[in-house]
Amino acid sequence: MSPADPIDVAVSDPDVRALLPRYLQRRSEDVAHLLALLDQGQYDAIAQLGHRLRGSGAAYELPAISAIGADLDEAGRCADAASIRDAIANLTAFIQRVRIV
Image (tube, rainbow, N blue to C red; front, top):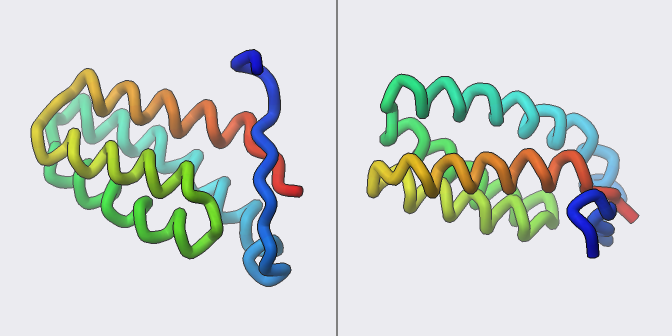
């Protein structure tokens, strides 16, 4: 699979499926917020946002978001800027490529 290929995600709950466009838009907004937090060295805030993503990803049937949230949580707690940048890149790529089926 190439980096531009869509990521197909099956969502079983029709109510969740209806909420996903707005949820993914908010995650897009999180990318800019995370970059600003990183520039400001606010690692605790990054960890908190990662923790929230971990939980919300599961609620919205998007385990990839949960995994990225866990990475952000851990990297924020460790003040690991390189890992935070990687996680932000992964979040961006997922949002751009995800296709709900």
